[in-house]
Image (cartoon, one colour):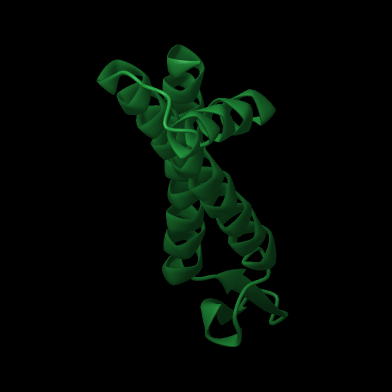
Length: 111
């Protein structure tokens, strides 16, 4: 991360001093900056998905179904909606993790 910052800072200083900078160097710096921004955004998305998954473990009131057993005891079970919600939270987390992995790979390839 610091290396990207230094590369971009060096490019800005060269431009400010009026020194010639190749289009290739400008393009590389721009691609690195873009890849870094994507990596930071993906990390934040993963953090949000993890927090949502952790806070979503507890069933919502409407996700419990009351049943009566043969012995007459009252029990509850979790509804299909609860399991669908858990599946979606896990799926969102996995997608965010993959997005971060891809962004990190892209950034490392450009460094």
